Image (cartoon, rainbow, N blue to C red; front, side, top):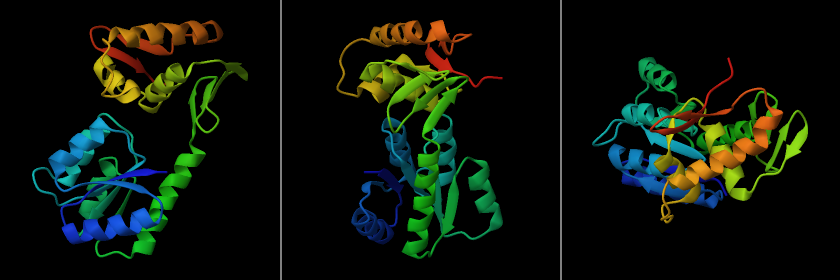
Length: 222
């Protein structure tokens, strides 16, 4: 079930979207202001964010820019503004799509399906000859399958989905292990070492780079 975060302060619109999206089989979380919406977007992983531009406490564009510093979650902007400049600002800031209010629910659902179809076609994460197949949960290097534990796999997915973003050990713990994990952050180092031992003998270079004093990052190959 795809999980959607809706950040919308209009109660009537939020309730309408809640009824329609749940009827379509989506799981929905609703936040009614920019600040709480941003916190929610960064604390949990969602398959899609529906983000209004005009929000209390923090504008939708500011929320969008802050999310894009840390995550690549697909985002569709919802706006009552029709000016081209607002649409351009949203797309330039990292939005995947936009839809102007008032809109027909059928159009929004179609745009959501396009986002999810694209996500399905992009479900192979790649770094050089390494391919991670999300649907089958397999990892191969030059066609040779690499056996990873569930936690190693989840950690590698998280790093690959956030390429070029330096991820702290604390952030990795929150996203991969969850908030109810009470061990210390050294466990991240242990799992990174294990992943490296399995992958690096088959790779020409180190894929997961250490950022001293902070955490880890996978950078795009130049």
